[in-house]
Amino acid sequence: MNIILLGPPGSGKGTQGALLAERSRASRVSTGDLLRTAVRDATPLGKEAKSYMDRGLLVPDGVVLGLIEDVLNSPRAKSGIIMDGFPRTTAQAEEVDRLLDARKMQIDNVLNFEVPDDELVRRMQGRAAKEGRTDDTPAAFQQRLAVYREQTAPLIAYYRMRGTLVTVPAVGAVEEIAKRVRKAVGA
Ligand code: ADP
Image (spheres, rainbow, N blue to C red):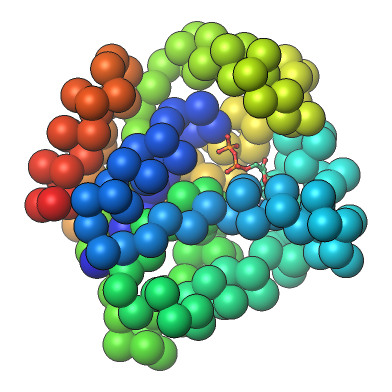
């Protein structure tokens, strides 16, 4: 089972991805988490990524594509990947297709998490107080929303055309949303 979680920042992809991973053999992989680890460890990749992340911009595809390749090459990919935070651009989506095709793997479901903007902003404020992420400032968050609309939202049409897209209303209790997710993927 390979699943893509698509949705704006704060739409709950991380929370729902983790719950779904507990219920299935698939592992959740978040490029945001991998990048934050690289930043913390001050690796060359992390050093390059940091300034983009802090400003709410996407890390350039050239930097992220290698990371995505590593994820899909890793042994755990064989039992399925829940992709949280990637692909995020058309170039990344094409790369995921290419890597999966070459391994005779496929995307089973793309879940499109829908949450109104005002609710996203509220959630970001709550998370900022708890986690202190450097990109959870009001300005960086607005930038992340704009980047989502411009660069990532076009993937909704990309996957809808293939019939793999399911829209999940992602407002309400976490467990209610988790039920919708399980129903959408048949888990
Ligand atoms: P959120 O979904 O709340 O924005 P993420 O943890 O997924 O949080 O991403 C945080 C930041 O990490 C993004 O704003 C971006 O700078 C970077 N990032 C994560 N995944 C990708 C990706 N696939 N391509 C480019 N940049 C990414």
